[in-house]
Image 1 (cartoon, rainbow, N blue to C red):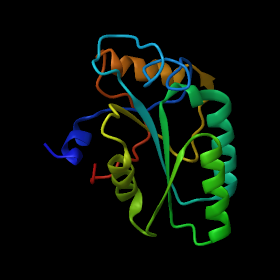
Image 2: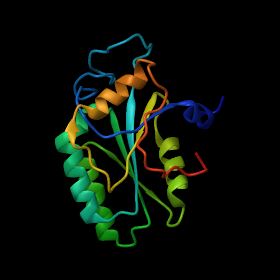
Image 3: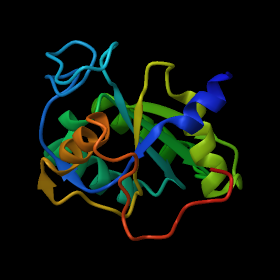
Image 4: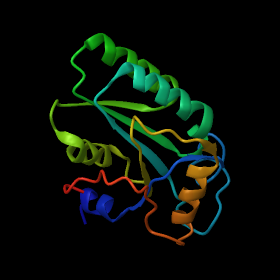
Length: 170
């Protein structure tokens, strides 16, 4: 099975908020105490495709850092279409400051193409992905961790918002 096929079999988790810990603390991350019986431990990543509006990114990253940063193991941000190199540099610095991984995609690959790039960029140990939008905010700490835990425990395979933004590529 190829890495891409494996990623397509991943359980997708998406929702809205914060709790738990992970690599920075414990929920199912690589270096903290692990809950459940997955062997090896479950890891999670938040994937953010964005056209790269620096104002939206500043607000989004502030929400991520303050509310739910410790609820996933990794953050991957793909800037797709921001023409200004200064804006891209600012976003890169801001993403890396909160511990995220910054990627750039070619302009015009679309939302589904950007998500595919992000899925392919996840390391082979990522078991759960949380798909997020740059115009979405997590309001309460513990929400994302709770949804990740539901997927990790096998209670559900997918958690999703009612927004219908999925692309056929996925």
